[in-house]
Length: 104
Image 1: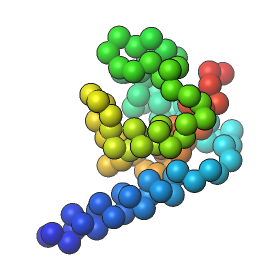
Image 2: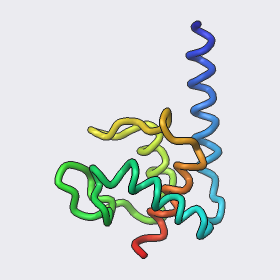
Image 3: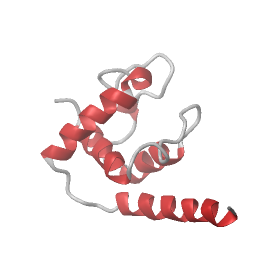
């Protein structure tokens, strides 16, 4: 059973590294990210990613800080739980695409 836990950690780190690569953002990713955000993030971060009552205002995170965004979503930060066990790397990449594209 110890090996399963170690394997999970190694796979999570590998996936986080793959998502962190500077791949171009596509309109499909932005649309997918919008849906993922609405389903998983809007409750705390607000429908427009601005001025939430109990979470970080995402408007304060630079739109070019992909690594910070991915690390925070994957591993959690402050009161935000880690989403790396819930979301697939491509879903986190889609969230980044939506976030970095700004409001539409």
